[in-house]
Image (cartoon, rainbow, N blue to C red; front, side, top):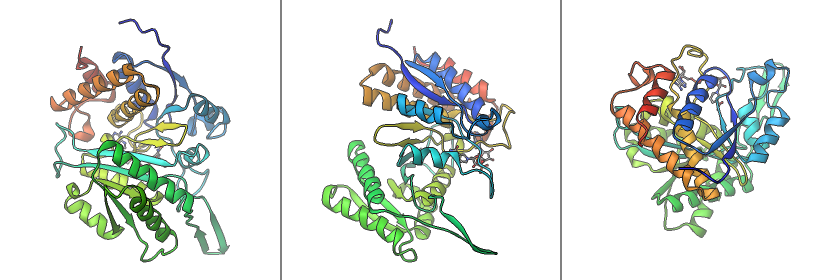
Length: 346
Ligand code: NAD
């Protein structure tokens, strides 16, 4: 059917390592599914550095601000030295304060657990990722953990509104306020206040994070939504990915009041980059979240239709055992994309 509305301009950052491979696969699938998206390709990460640009070029930030929506491949960050993580910078500069990571079992991806259906909400702008590090004396270094009432209240409000909109039953906050009484103490106090004042119909629970991690691996189905500060959210996202098949199946979104950047939880996987081994599914699922976001915020039904077609396509592919190696299959990145495209509903 001919479409009269213009397509949505969406910024695409291919990223580093496996990024270009998985973004290319996802682009192909979205085109085949008729997603009304025009890509505005921008650089960030090592790809920008190699072109003599900043790792997070001003023009990339401006393009995301202008178009308000982006799909981002993973970007490499040097370990223990070198530049500040572009992922952390991007989230802070654009004030993308809420990271949302749905973690669910998929048919055709057998794991130790069945019935896992979690949503992780991670505070994205402060905590131990504030970038405040100092050398006090030779051999003595510090990293400062920051918590502000404003950011703690904002993320709690966002999480409970999400719970209400999506009919979620319970929000569990993981913390270490027994040790970090000020910072984690503020995080739980703000969450509790927001809950008690505005969202008392939603279940609310606080758990010390070590006990919470044990509970998660014993029986993840006891949890519904997890609300976490920055570092805990980062760590728990990978832990929870492991419950449902690994990093190849967990998508994500970084959301602010005006702008949203969608990206998989996984990194640039330099160990498998350039070998046609990467699973594009996590980025594809992130693109489905992006299309649903466009459908909701711009009231464009065509985005919701394309999102559902893609979901049906990858669910069929997985159910028929058409999977990449990380999920026990034999397909390469491009072959999995072909398998999804062949199974898109008419
Ligand atoms: P990683 O997520 O890149 O990889 C961890 C393991 O999972 C590796 O064995 C990798 O091969 C595997 N893996 C990840 N994604 C996969 C996929 N799509 N298909 C199949 N296997 C996959 O984590 P890492 O190795 O700790 O980090 C590598 C780089 O990525 C670092 O520079 C890190 O800073 C960066 N990173 C970026 C982001 C981001 O851009 N949002 C997130 C996490 C890590």
